[in-house]
Image (tube, rainbow, N blue to C red; front, side, top):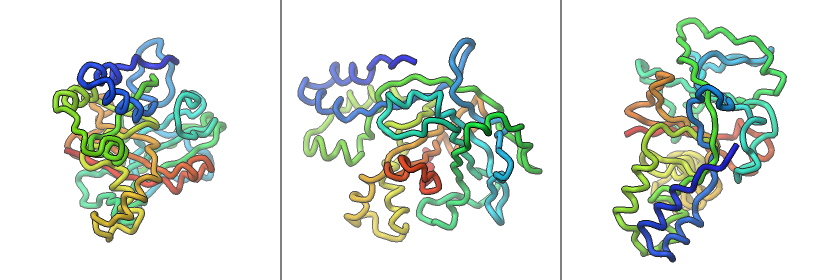
Length: 276
């Protein structure tokens, strides 16, 4: 696996002064960018299809609403873990489930912990890869299966992120540079690690608000402090190939505290989603 050319860094060199470009590039983080695998590409995961769940692991269900859809999985051993700055497991598979029934009024709300069961992240042991595919529960139609490959490349902080605000203060980044970054990041964007590409408010802020109970004021200074303690684990975008559309061109995000990730406490990950 090779590191992708630093096109984002080139944009900074083109549109910013040398000093501002250095400051902005220093904020970039490596991400494992996932895309549809073509013939000959190494496969590191997939969207859709049916999960291979080991005996004793139930298909996730939101009681009172129904079974969650199987969205994606990645093979931790196949990911370029050594090139990322988050502590991914050395083996096993991360499997992502989400309720997402647009014909139902039930929505996962990061500010309401009672709804968090509508999104689930499982770390399945390596031997579960040999388990048979688990049939979908009655009434649930699986998404089409799309194999995923990976490239490693930089990811940029949101223009409203706390990290960028802290680094730039009153220094304004030119609109031409912002448009160039937005254009570069357009299209389907699945990734593991790095900076999230938030559709609206920086997702770290949204998760921090939920982690503090969801009823605190958005102006509460504790939110910014809490947001500093969360990192993106996975971002799963809308994808026509897999017939996945999250609201109006939105994305699903799972964030986790670094200590919980290093300890394998995936039940501590918090989910949020955004759409246009």
